[in-house]
Length: 365
Image (cartoon, rainbow, N blue to C red; front, side, top):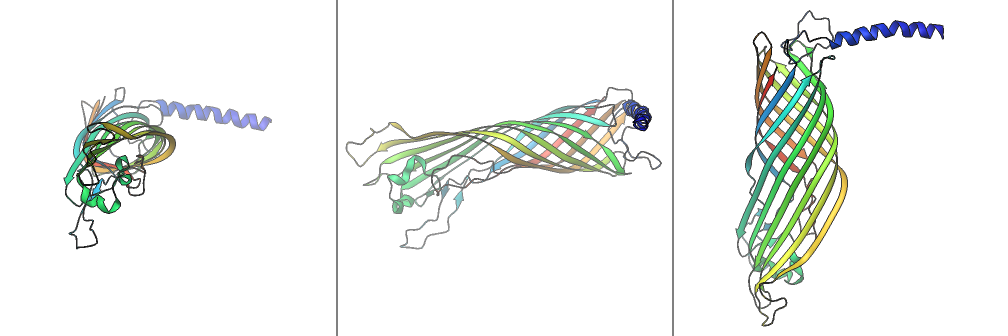
């Protein structure tokens, strides 16, 4: 026991001294690791001298967002009596839209640690409409197969439209440390949390032609998702320094997201003409044919990748630091399509992908 106390009394002063050393103002701004440095993993910053080492970031995004499994109509279905021309699978026409990120961080006085929080917002939508005499619906809207014979569907659906809308909000909170592993290569491992809430809507509309057996109708489906999640996020930021100004960066992050999906599907049928002289319901009546909600929790994976070029400068006796970088970022939200489906003819679940150009600026003081 006496020997144990002697060991503890020896270790305690050394530990306090090490913490005091790590709590001092940073001596290195993180430009290039010195070859003569005795520190195993020298601090790579970037940081400033004589400041509070707080930094702000702002990103301009120009991204495309898309989701698997949203084919709403297919052409090229024949009648087994004559050869049909090659058709196509029709899905919303994916667009590129601007978005932004804003963040704030602080380089802590302990061992080069940093804490950083960033908010991401993007709004994207896509739609497409098609017309033809051989359209095959991929969604059984208003249970259309119950009142249209299967062999008549390709000749009855004359118009189809699919539209998709996304409101995307994310907060990322990180605790990391940026350090040199060689004179010109720095790494920043980090861990933290991801918070998100999203509104995702998918609407499909079909129009049927009037025949001796089938009414002329508009069939509409609303599939709306309210989504939120919180999860553990970890990753690695890599920087290859060409010199003290220019570098190449590559980042990776993985998230296991505990999420809740609140999904509402509502199908509506409106008949405008009917072969029946006394139709039920009456013409022009909006008949809700399907109305259901599905709520559930699950763990979903998110993968983030980015690569690009960076330039950074210190000025005013290294009291301020400015960084600008441009690159490409990709995010994969695994199995994020959870729209309510009724029959096997409808598209399967799928992933959501966000990708595009990123321009970032950072200012330290």
